[in-house]
Image (cartoon, rainbow, N blue to C red; front, side, top):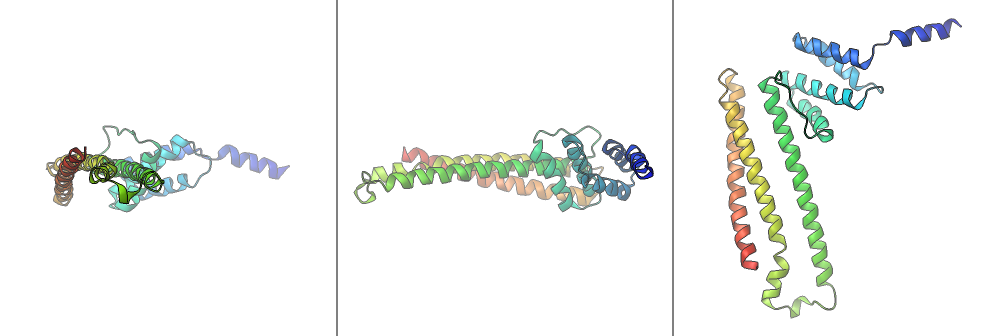
Length: 223
């Protein structure tokens, strides 16, 4: 009887995930990052979290890790959020140091997803071409030069599409990097990261533009 009563008392006194999450947010707002981190780690180890509470815990953990300079850990937590909610919106209270990093992780995941889709499309196209070329009615040795060009032309739309994605991602990264570098109210090291991101982005955009133009020209020639 006493054991059952003690168990019921402990159950009633247990702190809910929402309470722990609110306490972690308070600790983070008070700049007590180590306590906030400890609370969030405990939260993520619980099995009674709702999906929303888990995502919010991951975001808060990523925010804390970014502030502490642990970018690898922050990226893991932000990726966990964006893999479930790609359109996750940031409130105006989120500091620029966290906001810019979160948006970069969003761009990385979008690029990775598009690259996977293009790779799958290219593999599917290649598989179809292989099946066609292995059939008795289409022998490579008897194909005319024009037919060979037409068979290989299916690759160029994939190349042009990939180049367009690289161009868009490069321009986006360049703009974000320039915005980071223009923030005169943050440390120079933080601004230097922005300059590096901008230069990398503009370089990627240039390569994407060149590849896209070349691929488009070859596509038109193939037609």
